[in-house]
Length: 265
Image (cartoon, rainbow, N blue to C red; front, side, top):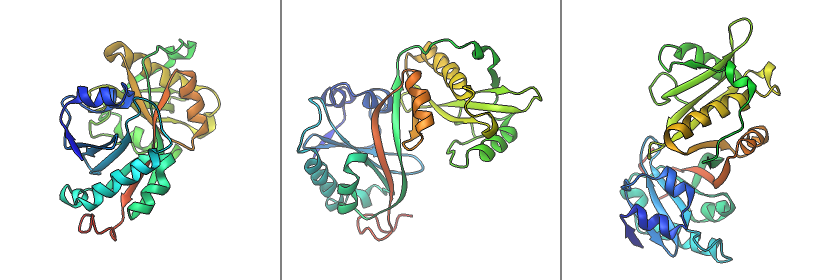
């Protein structure tokens, strides 16, 4: 495996991949390796591990699955998972079977990393969007998101979401909310987009997402998000707003039985 330290080199090898450009910081953090045109990018934070990203500067090839298998084997057999305290890996969804064959993987999820640099159309409903505060409104945001989307991963009240907006109904209660975190690059990353169950289908998710996207583009020129891959309704909303999928990830925790990661919970 070849060690990389240059973000510019990784971006070039990837063919200007939006995920590399907007999600990975410059300078690179942690360890980054390339093996047979597959990048192995150390992921820091609360779920340390690796992104396994084929570099598609020339587009996918028929041998990609084989190259992913070899890269994962190098990662495991070289002791890098144990050495760096890895607890999880994310691989392209189309190579999930390969990953499970090479590594002992546990629970996780399938999700899309999406991006846009295009301004969404202005919606008249945008004038109903109001600012919310991550700390002042934390209790209300927490109740609302847990009630209407139990799968939400967003941290509320910690400062991680630095920009919240919402829409209130006639009774003053929230009917839709959304926020923005920051990628390691500083680019806004949409999070916690939730519509009240009884108000779904009214376009409120589009209104909130569009307002956040316009705000993100005005300040940074790009906006990203992550969505569960099985959420067809969300996919439709984001497609209308100009978002495209750059990476469809299969993210899984390393099982305790994996010898390469034993001892890391």
